[in-house]
Image (tube, rainbow, N blue to C red; front, side, top):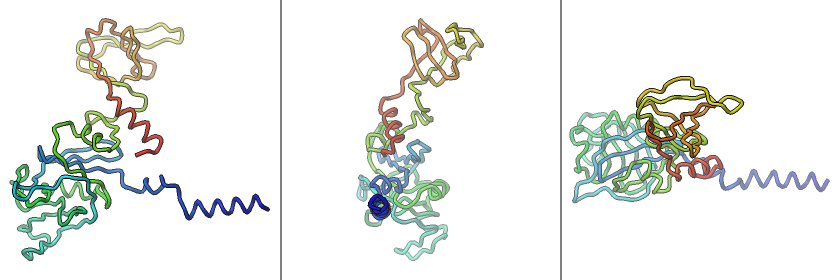
Length: 259
């Protein structure tokens, strides 16, 4: 009886007081990274880089604020109240879509002046081509994190430096247990490893062909999966690039449920 009562109490407590990680996982795993230095906006989803867009940001007198924000509202064809221009009007400076931030009246929105994208001429908001903000609107939920900064690093590295657990590399998916990428600079051979340990040549590679590498032995043997190897002891016909350690760490932490 006591054991049954204990189980009932624990079940009730878990229902009323969920584990802290469950609340964290309800946050959208998206990131909007805005680079004021280059007037570019990069979008990430589930730790992976997706796409970069050209934008327009604030002029010198009304700069776009830097910081860490969230999307708090979304509108289609938002009315421009300052001049009483209805939503959907081709002269409406807010354009086709609006993603409002938790900082006064700043937002990411479309524009009625497509030719200004890439310049510094807004009142602080982030302007996008209408086709681009419509693409974003469909993929960005409320509470999506928005980082506004100035930097000259690759978007994936900058996102990592701002605390987002990036698991893509050079805009490509990093597979579990992958340690690097091999690019063949000259024709070389692909080998199959027999059960007895012997290597059998099965085909020639193509110049500039790339392979995912899962392990590397000192004698120039690159394991590329499915019991296949590229062997170049002199390393004269291949170029090997190692995945940054932070990508592998981020991958491990995401598997463990840590964002």
